[in-house]
Picture 1 (cartoon, helix red, strand yellow):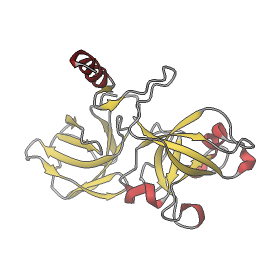
Picture 2 (cartoon, rainbow, N blue to C red):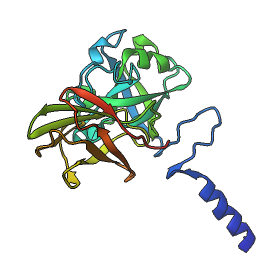
Picture 3 (cartoon, rainbow, N blue to C red):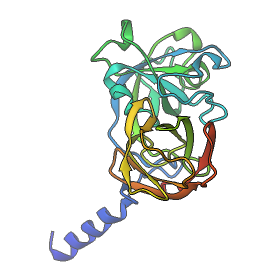
Picture 4 (cartoon, rainbow, N blue to C red):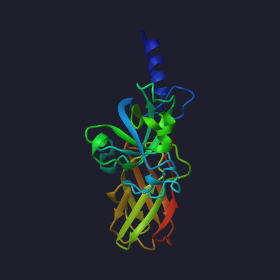
Length: 253
């Protein structure tokens, strides 16, 4: 190839990565992808208005007010990773079933768990989509269709949101609206009078601290599955209260 050719290839390889994510070359699609296409199946649940998808095993509650809307999915055991996949984004495309498949793809956020029983049994890779999302890629009457999926970057509006629940000595913080990889794998918290201390994951994307942090402004260090980290300094003021939501920094997409 020669040295010059090698250098050109190396330079182009570097250009293919933006903020640590491979760039998706199709100009019509703005989601950078995080992995290869993988075979799976998809069904749907929750009704035509997706009302049955609210709540869920990730702890997000009202998916409309949290900004996820109907672009959501419940994941099978093999994908859910005991809740660590909550918040991750996936692009899905219906394949190999011309009778039922529709063209195009969808991007959904993991917000729920599809329990074992039928298609969601291990080791199946399965997405139980909200009905509106399913009907973007397949006809309703299909019921179940083969799909291919891949992880993509999550694009969020505004900063990461921290909802503080619990009580003194038990701070349970729900973390939502996470961009980039989307799935939070570790969190640290710092009161204005404490050092940084790790939080433990209670369930879904609810993270807990057993420290007494009342009356202190709170900072958070959020790490996603790709190892990238974002610090939100003093996101909750000293007068914070339980039940309130505070908005911090955000991952660059």
